[in-house]
Image: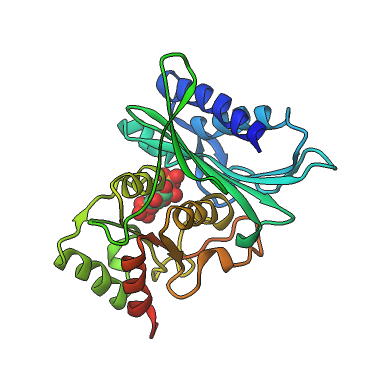
Length: 281
Ligand code: AFP
């Protein structure tokens, strides 16, 4: 596993460099979900693939930017599902973006996850790992190495509310739920990048991030393998919870590589509220 974390760190240094100095315009390609790819998405994907291809314990890679998984080593143990540059369009407005990695064994169901890692590229570059050692945050130093900063733990209740999706397409119970958090004093924190938004909730001790089913996206927007399962794993290991409204996200199966699901990540109290508000959905 450590060699995978090292490869992620080497990729992060290179990705940080292209975010800062290279073209962030659109390419002429579309990814498997139909999004027009930015040059940054394509370059980040290539960087990660190159670093991972040096590691014998990796059996296969599945990238959000590719239609199909890419086999690496027949005898490898791990399958890696990753989003090379989540929220890449935010680079243009100089907001934080991130890379997300799920390290799976045997398959890509939620319960196949063994570890999850994300990197936030912002005013600082930070990496968070979640595994049997808990959730640990590292920060890039002047020496171009990542240094351990602290362990991350969620409180049972927080103060931040990050509600995703197009509001006019929210269902009535979801509107009421989001409103009830605000009525109880929660403050809005939503940048449009799930990595910095979920990172902020973790660092500040708690809150709720939601990307619900909407009338235009009945299965939500966020992808299970590349985005949802890895963050569900991080949130659970940090003492929080993650559900699709009713079911624990990590109990969900993945039928197609690019499957999406509605998702809620948060501290325990907030997730309890989501559960009761979705009970009669
Ligand atoms: P992009 O990668 O297309 O910018 O989308 C980012 C993202 O997948 C995730 O990081 C955000 O939380 C979510 O989409 C934002 O979606 P909405 O703009 O629909 O709230």
